[in-house]
Length: 185
Image (cartoon, rainbow, N blue to C red; front, side, top):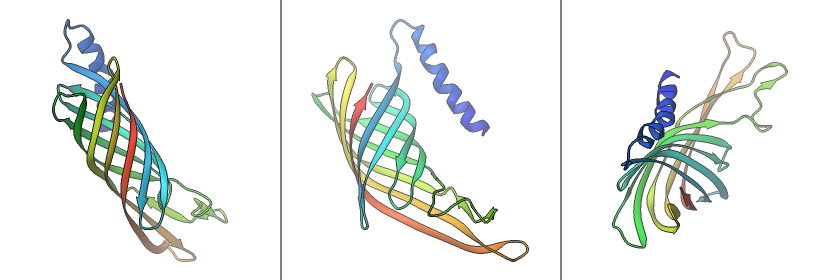
């Protein structure tokens, strides 16, 4: 938890530090996008926001997404991007890696008859891909990207009555293609 607080503090302080300089080199940036996740079993919409810092052609930030593929979850990840070239349409590459936080639902409720039913684990989430960006107004850039996304979903299903409660661990591995469009400020 301390690690997340330190990272959060850094992103809150960094814009104020460079704001006092005459010509800032490091700039705060936000990327907000929506897209389609398409895999073997379904096609779903996703929402994503990333906040970070931009330095020349590099971007690094912390992001969160709303992902309903397979089972609803909130991936929390680190995003690294590299823009290539300096033309109207700028290609970029990106990579995300982080943790996938699953959400309880009616399908897998937190409790059954007043006792714990499931324990969710927070396994790996990752994505990598290519994209194009184009400045549309001032410092606002339109982005379009395509990539490969990977998400794990894992839980322990308790079996009662046993002391201590035992159960079966169940895991799913979702591999899917991602197409997203958004804006970067």
